[in-house]
Length: 411
Image (spheres, rainbow, N blue to C red):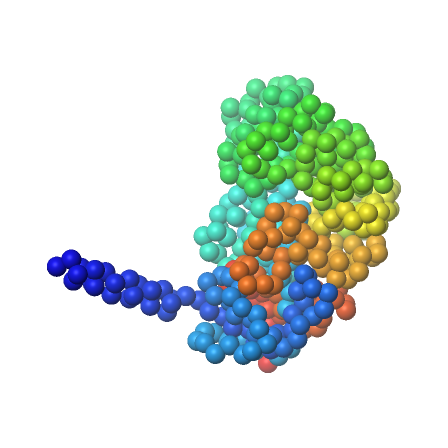
């Protein structure tokens, strides 16, 4: 009797395995020219097999197995781009980002945990939502005085309401805010070492969190297993953030070589968001935008200089758009092109939005390159983007987690 039960179980297991094999999703991309950021040279006429949302194989040998086939006819394939600094607050914005070939992004400030919600939709399997690394609200010295208004943090976390009435949150308040944000299962914590640059009322060279508050926030995030990103501009603010233990510096326009050497020594990555400072006010610009123009120009000039020094020192520079992807707002492609204009090679600029970004954001085990075992996030282009970065604006195929999101292949 026992032998018969075992035999029946083996049959059931075999049937289950067969069903799984039949149900698995296999996509075969044929005649692909590959630009792998981990390599200096392209690889031509390859077959890429995607299975169950992962890259199964890349080979010059045609794949003889069942599955949907797409003949790329010599199109150029990159891993999906990564935007290291976004402000996504809606599904439409996420879809626009994905339509540009950007398959992953790190949120750096939203209200109401919209980024956590978008991440949940992606995890559920929605093909129209990219991978999102969520941060929710930032840690600020005085949340009620921040612009734009983020006082909704006290509605999402009523237990923090006593901090609303304080002049500064203090180290204890910093820890409590980190704990509250972490409780929403975010992936990163963002801290403000300096004030904002984009409003006239604040000076980006002025500190926001002081050393004690900054250290408390980063230590608490580290204790909870979360990396930290610092909004910072000045040498003082960046040094304080680096000494506190942050992983990335956002903006950093005013920093000088000694600070960049410290970043290099501590393994801190630089997200300069240059393109956002290159946008000049149009004819319909507001009085505030016009008044900010000299400041923005200074930040662009100093930021470009900082990126050039970072490149010489070997500080990892990664691409972040600082965009909400609403309407015709800029994308990480604009930032890649801007970074190349500072002296980075085209391939180095592409790495800033692929393999290097994945490494700095701790997702290189799944994103940023083309090799077996990584997520099947791929973008195809009609020409080689290493020769002309403007090609990045013309994706003809976007695959998100092994599923086709956009297909504009020529007939």
